[in-house]
Length: 132
Length: 35
Image 1: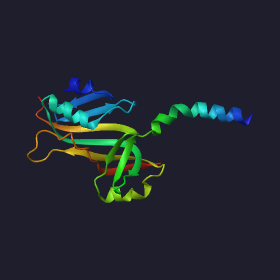
Image 2: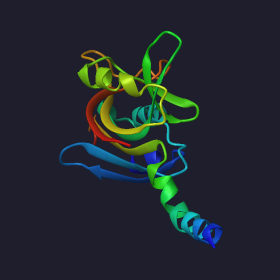
Image 3: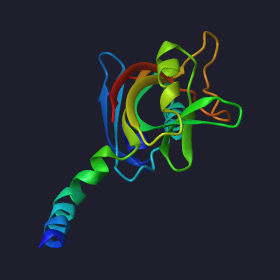
Image 4: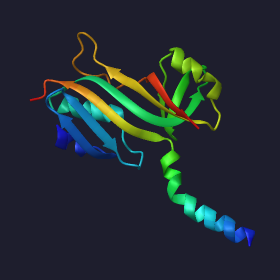
């Protein structure tokens, strides 16, 4: 699995801990890493992803329907799941302020084995680390 | 004189720019069925 993930575009390095089932992925600075692609690659290597967390910095944007998203690259917005932390960032929508957040992108459902990569991953913010 | 100082300042701060760039910094997964 380590080699499989390491071959994905935008991946700098992969650290696997067999004891607690943790996989740490360090992205390259080219911004090419795609979490949905990593989920698919993990599944293809015969392993089930139970949860995926991401730390990212970007700008808060609002789409035409008024939904918030974290824009980490020009064409890569992650829609935000509404919670108290995302509501707290609403005032920063469409401003030049960059925020660094940690959040959950994927959690396996009770009966789901294969992650659905046809829908965009939504980010459930669990921590706002920085606003600048 | 001032423009030289500004140019020097820009030159010195350029390498710091990517640090504050919007990007994914880290991804962590918890997986099952790994042997």
